[in-house]
Amino acid sequence: MTDVLKIAVEAIGQDTLRVILGLIGVLILVVINALMLTWAERKVAGHMQRRIAAKEVGPFGLIQPIADSLKLLGKELITPMKVDRVLYFLAPVICFIPVLVSFVVIPFGEGLQVRDINVGILVILAFSSLSVLSIFIAGWGSNNKYSLIGAARSVAQNIAYEVPLLLSLLIVVIMVGSLSLKDIVEAQKGMWFILYQPIAFLIYFIAGVAETNRTPFDLPEAESELVAGFHTEYSGMRFAIFFLAEYTNIMIISAVATTFFLGGYLGPYLPGIVWFLIKTYFLVFVILWFRWTFPRVRFDQLLNFSWKILIPVSFINLIVTGGILKL
Amino acid sequence: MTKVTEIIKGAASLIIGMGVTIKAFFSPVVTVQYPRQTIDITPRFRGHTKLLGDEEMPERTKCVACGICAKNCPSRSIKKVEGEKKEGEKKKTATTYILDFTTCSQCGICVESCPFDALAFSADYNPAGYSREDFLYDLVKEYEKRKKV
Image 1 (spheres, chains in turn green, brown):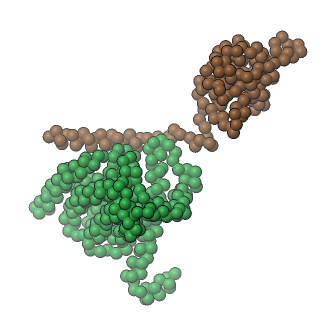
Image 2: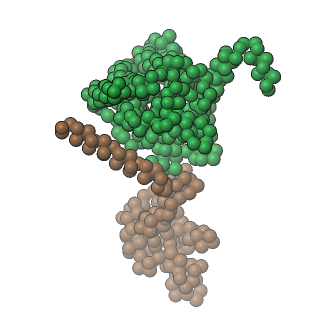
Image 3: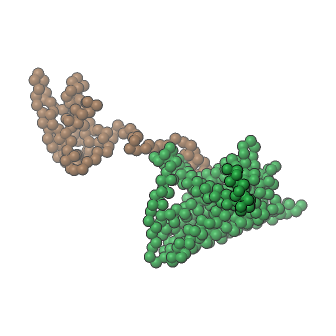
């Protein structure tokens, strides 16, 4: 095994090999994460309503997501007649690529990072904004009124919530003085930033839930109003890719929150990756918990909440933090 | 100022809501995996009627085939009540008791009117069949079957 690695290193160079292996690892992680989360979502939903939830396929229903994905793979890919074909095909692809790229810069453990880019957080934010584009393309290309309304809502919502999200992350960046995720984690050796900046964490988390279009902010796919929103016309594996991207986005939001506010992979006794996964999946659980507790907000409430409360508060927070650091 | 208190109150209510769901999350489930497990039927449940066994002679039912239930049935669902007198016994013993469950509305007049208290509601809540004839129950035969089990 080491021989094979040595030959590969000589052939293509250590850096390229690291990226290739990292991307393979990320792909595996993304798929397993999405499968686990579909299962977890059903289980959490069931137990919060005091039902049993999935339990028939495999022990505790653990094989259920594999059965579901096999079903989706076996389905015919239906393309409605009047869709814009190029955009319709492109949307799931555009939806999926940015979530892969975001994982490249996330430090899972000490040294367990595909690439430590010195503007790491910018990479994540830049690429996660692309998911809005994919939702808009999906809504536009479907040539369906519900899809289009869902897409329009998604754009308005994502613009509104991107601002507080960026501002609250900016506070941490100012405190550390670096955009690299690894530096940010290392800066939390003494104390997690959630203790310095609880409000920034709260704002980031709320905005993050809104960015991933999860309940209570799931207006782009509000079932009771818009059938299924932007993915109304998608079926089979194309729908599954949207689903995969949604769950991966949840994980990215939680992973970034862990990195910025909860000390990333830092923690006593256990290895770094274990701490990282514990913190991340706790936040994922909280997002699932939100979904089964809160009703959906109205659209004007949603925008008012961002523009009138979150953005001013995060601006004040930013100014105060900057002032204190300057003193 | 009212705006701020509104926000704080709203946030508190959200936390209370999350408390409710997390409590439910850790409480035991109240549903069962239906075809494999079933919950007990409450004693007041009205299934189709059944004949009760005689306490002294468990091989026969309490029914003496008097036919009062059939006369009282508002839907004429009790089609046939027949019986015969066995040797050495004062009363008749029911040999056939046909109940047409397709028209029975479980009103319970037969149960109330029975002078021998031979009828009661069963807990059979999920009868299914392919034809109307499947729902012509012979309650005497049904009693024999129950007795064996």
